[in-house]
Image 1 (tube, rainbow, N blue to C red):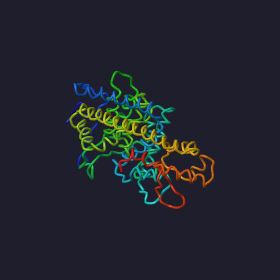
Image 2: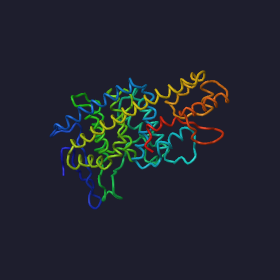
Image 3: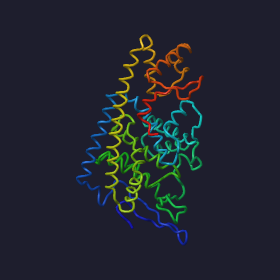
Image 4: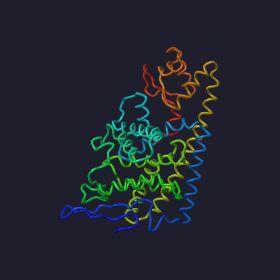
Length: 380
């Protein structure tokens, strides 16, 4: 059955015949988005909270204290939606060089972090475009499951979601011919200037990308990253401080039902409301995390100030923990240009203050972690 979101197109003939869904281009028409009181309220609240988040992370704390770890939390949750078992702690341990029992699929999370960092830097020289999306996909798929499924290239064959074959699929993606046309429309919509709310456009960009599903694998991760990249493009957030993977994971069934109802019923409004609730929920959580970091920092600096002559060096090490929450004796030696023995005594003092803990319990090559800071982000 056809609806305002698109139509089913018959492909092939005989026993190989199937119907794929071809979304209509954005924005939705006939009718356009319907604004009832609930939707208007949710849009207003979403804008309010996302604005507050931007303000809090710009004034309450230095944004860099937040961005490094928050991107890693998002990377972990987004990858877990795709089936990885690695945790946030696994990622931090891997980055610290502690290789004992690190799951293989931590590489997928590391790739996501690389894609986040690359994307925000790349946007300074390349518009948010189809080429940009392909570059992000290539980074995500390097050396992980799906690396043999054309990283960085849009699919050249029919694909489907659910079921062991196309005849049992729950959703058959648009054919390649229609896919390419839809991708160009999506790119135009991303850059089109109109009076539509940026947050509604963000919701529509994500849902349209997921309905098109232009890659053989990795579409979910790319689609979730598009949300952060588009909000940055439109200057809604000055730093990548809002990600929706935790909300999507927590409400996974509703998320899939809302996307399904777009192509099945043409119901964009329920999806947009769900998306706005996600922005509100996620912004509130991120604001609370930023405040917790600010409070933690204030308390820890007070502790460090009691260290006497060591406090200046301790503070330099402490500030670095917000960029990387793990450190070693060698790191401390190199950062401060001090001896091994002096670095060891400084680390012990920070342990005594409850700021650092030793996470690998080895007499040599000790790795220390700023656990209270990590705990603010960890859902393990």
